[in-house]
Length: 278
Image (cartoon, rainbow, N blue to C red; front, top):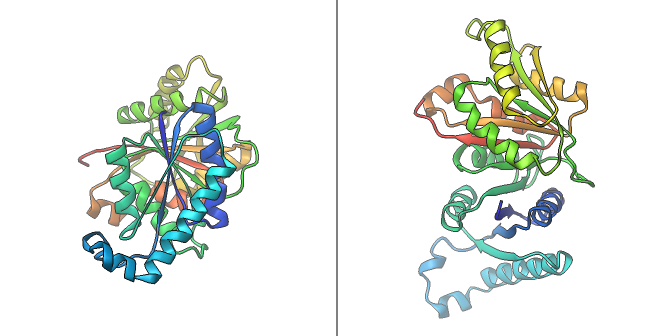
């Protein structure tokens, strides 16, 4: 991991995510990219210098953002930090930064469904998870010590989930955790048979070597509730999900377990995606 993007609106929630992101950057020796969306005129990029200088409100917003960035750099001396700001769409700007700068990892805060922050309420976090092809670590609550000692990897454990699992393994190896693989069985008639799920879990368990790894099939009314309940039962400190990008119409019909979990879980959630034509 060479580059970490930390979007921020300088709220308390974003500060919690920044602490985690900076801790990871120090652990991995990664470069940090801080990004903030600010209020700028829609045509800011095409304005001439004199027009920009005359816009006092925009200049004030820029200066305040720069002062916040300067304070952050002072607090996290020793890390390589590059700062970015822009107007426009938060999610589109994040996607552009990931593509342009070759970002390996995103750490961002989310207030979830009850949040009040304009930039980081659940909907925007979910859109980043859905639209940006990059691992995203979502932080909901303050984390004093970033240890990740007991980790849940929740998945359907299909063949396509192996690539995200190996990416997860590469990330988590720095923490030497206890890994729990969990498949959720619901009342749906379309789920795989128990024996098929068990065989798939055992296959992934072999991929997890040399880490301690346990397999589970957990029954609940929904995948979202099952993952959250299981994670609480074992005292997990991180949930990891393999995330794929469903056709918009299919997503609208059946919803997204990943986005629902991102919105409802209080535990940190790491999503690792793979594109699909499904």
